[in-house]
Length: 159
Image (tube, rainbow, N blue to C red; front, side):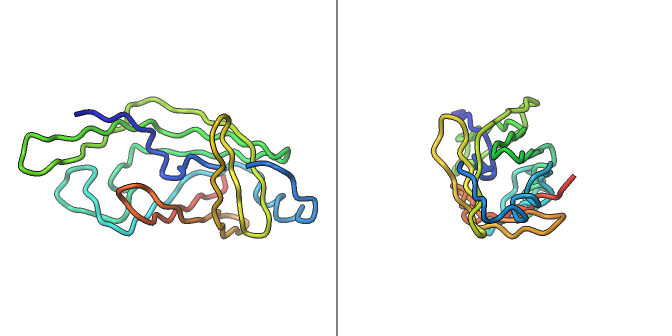
């Protein structure tokens, strides 16, 4: 049985909403830029690369996965993310998920807003996602719940 999914770790990170917050230009200004996903840590060890060693480091388990987020100062964003193919091997006594990068890059665009530490992304044609972020000059971090993996911590690094 094959299940086709976009493995957006949020969000993946099916991300973010719109409206501007004129009271927080310095926070917004520091969010604007290009961000590369550099860490994804799950609460449940998984063995996506089928090497026999489960890990909570999801990028180690699926090194072909890439996610680049470009946040613009006009409250729009674009995200290029690796498309993932998930199939389930049901030939044995227990189903085994098989996850592979397809080689395709999916592009998502939408709008965003930031109020305090609450970042809202609204992808075009989708419902908004709201996450509490931690933002420094070089990192953007947040947690989200991913079906089957539980709570996942994501870290993006400014490029």
